[in-house]
Image (cartoon, helix red, strand yellow):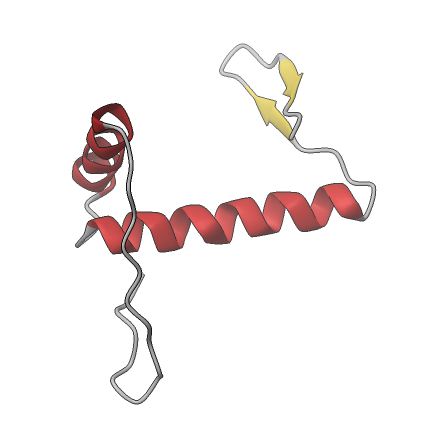
Length: 75
């Protein structure tokens, strides 16, 4: 995911989080090759927004495992 364009207005946000949450963000950054923790948060927000919009429209989100089983992901 590319960085925000320089001509797009931005706002700084300071977050307080547990060490476990910080480590989870860092792990996601490293395993997904994201450039920054901000990028991990931005990507996560995009996924959450998509899932929530689907749920609001009555959709169901499923995950298909390697064995073919399906699980309904509830939000």
